[in-house]
Amino acid sequence: MAHTSDKPQVAGLVLAAGGGRRLGGRPKALLEHRGRPLVENAVRVLWAGGCRTVHVVLGAAADEVLRRADLSGCVVTVNPDWADGMGSSLRVGLASLVAAGEKDGAVVSLVDQPGIGAAAVARIVAAYESPASLVSAAYDGRRGHPVLFGARRWADVAAGASGDRGARDYLAAHESEITLLECGDVAEAYDIDTPDDLAHLE
Image (cartoon, rainbow, N blue to C red; front, side, top):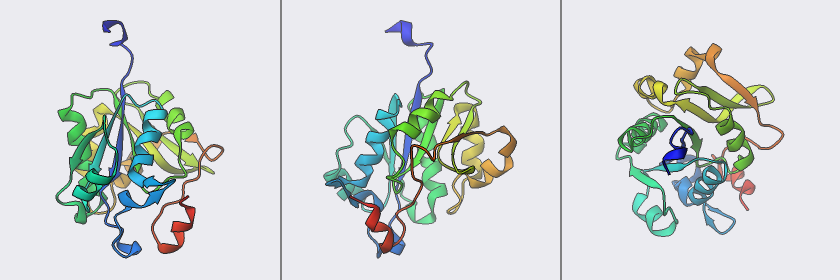
């Protein structure tokens, strides 16, 4: 299939390592949504949105997640330092992309945002232009997920990812370079963080 090699290959990256501290220690990847673990939903959304490959970072209860969730076809890595916060998982995920030879860009999504579906992902994927691309979904003008990072940005994103901040500092420092795409018409950006939020799951 050499003729497709010039087409950008945008990867997907699901951060699914959290232990669900505010949910009484229920790992978010294992929360049930439409009868399946939440991490499966996140993976399906990235495939359906046009990501060519999907990488998943697990952490809390990783063995149980691997037992219960169908992650076939995904590149799965386990972050041993998941309890340090999302930053360490983002670094592990970006390292996984590099190790796999991904070289165009990656759409980063969070496992606990099931209101963001394939339509929003497809909109972000379609905006990829080069390995320097920086694209973010917006909801009523406010930046949210998913976010696409061109491959040329990965090293700097990883260098700044610490604690629970993930890529927040990087995005704030490069605000003027971000292509913001309104997705509020096709997605809802709520998180599953507290017991009350569980009502969003189906």
